[in-house]
Length: 205
Image (cartoon, rainbow, N blue to C red; front, top):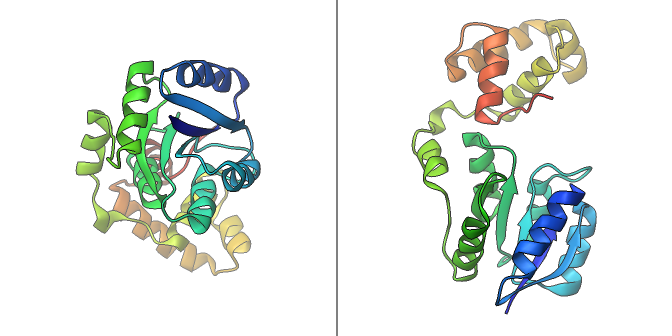
């Protein structure tokens, strides 16, 4: 029996996942929660074989959930199921400890296949997501400060606002933006935000 912790904040999605997984022979949902904080506690309580985790959760993100659970159990296994499909979303999830990544339009058969693969110690990525990772350029990875600036830019802030928020000079903001534009291969602020959203560096809306 594969014992599973389900972490999904959307009620109907959680019900649907429970029905698909718990109704499948050889699999059991031992606990479920919409909360990242509760997920960490429930993992310690139930010690499931793997977790199905959404990246977008209220409060603690799915990435933070995986990091905290891995802190208490380095062998913890995760299947990420998310609306996000950017190359950076997938890269961050795998770096945080996920062994499988599916988007929420995946079918039930694919989810079951991913669960079985992860339980057997293998990685599972759909071909489209594998293709995204193959074309990702590590040299273009943003620094933590560049990502801070980009995130603030995506929220509609001016250079002055970004400088005030981050406690840096406005000319430093402009320098960071120049590097961000170069790494994203764009020419202006609007293109930067759109490309960052496509890659999963930021999420609009």
